[in-house]
Image (cartoon, rainbow, N blue to C red; front, top):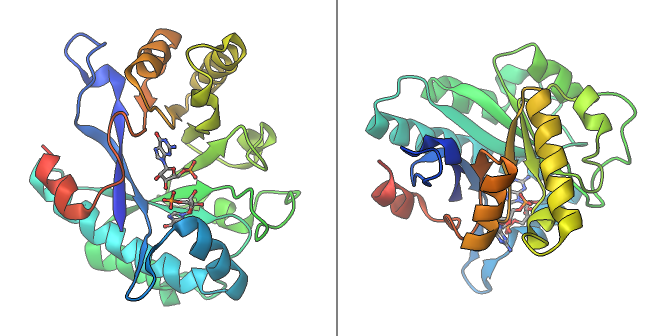
Length: 244
Ligand code: G
Ligand code: G
């Protein structure tokens, strides 16, 4: 597993200063193959989805993320850590919750679940589910919180805001690309920030690759950001070394 921090821009002493302390970290799976080297998730995750292995993979990801969240929370003196993982919308483990590896992981580590709902643009996703997918209804009645990923692209559309009781929106990284030179990209991002904040959601802008983009986002009112300029996805060991 690799972990990529999300940074809270309002965390600095003067509100403008970027604190390196993560607000959250996103868990991303990697496959280190003995012969083929590192296989990108973009290649094996769709395969895992089409074969159903994504259920086992999801259990592994959740167990790892839970163990890691607990370790990091201990360093920070937090009693109730949260674990955020990705779940492709559209395919589900139909076993009862207690029998699923994820449920066991949460119990074992005494964690609050924080599900990171991923809305895939990919083929494995069922085409535009007409009503809230079952896991979202389930999560809405439990202690879990949801985030909508890649907001603004593919199936991750405005109507999702009505369907998914998410506390967090992650604005797709394609919108950061245009900043700060494209006025239309800036207008879209500032409108989405306003929309999300009016709905009392946390809005995370993804894909911040340089200082100018970060500055522009701060000016537009972004509070939470993620991207290579702030921190790359990294191993748990590297993350722990910079975690304070
Ligand atoms: O981290 P990377 O750029 O390799 O990820 C590419 C894509 O792989 C992501 O956008 C996402 O679709 C998927 N992915 C990465 N980690 C996970 C994971 O833990 N679970 C699931 N379901 N998908 C993931
Ligand atoms: O958009 P999504 O959450 O699916 O993207 C996840 C992937 O994007 C991760 O695998 C991560 O490696 C990659 N990623 C994270 N931050 C950046 C960034 O600033 N620039 C680019 N190009 N990719 C990023």
